[in-house]
Length: 189
Image (cartoon, rainbow, N blue to C red; front, side, top):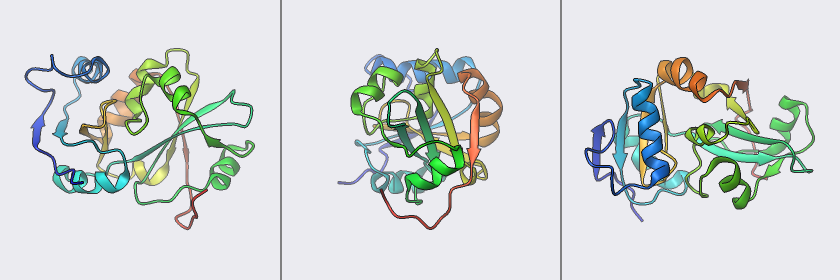
């Protein structure tokens, strides 16, 4: 399946009435904050392989987003990392000083962030006013001039400057980020 964007525009769609409410809320938040962004509309992009074509069109990296939990399923973590990097739980668990983490369930993702699997995004944190999900960012993500992520739906991808991401969006989401540095050498869990 190809995910070459059909449209790349600045800002929200001119007519967003056909878009899902969770997607419209993302555009409303970014517009309210005065954050400029480019938007690529495309076929469903549920994997990082699909996102590679979109990255080329947008000209910025799309970060990998993983929702993780501890064994007791009492602590939740949203990890943003480079799309090319392979995740290995032992490195993150060690960096956070916690027991081994595993993937949260699809139901937990929907309950905590109002997002369906394949669409996980930092923008989902706007749906977590109780701060039940802790934001973790792998340092190389922050070294990029821009960051790409879905507007809580994986049929569009947004590109935002790193300055607006760290200086405007993250403070507005009220989820302080913990920055870690995960090794490049990894093996999937």
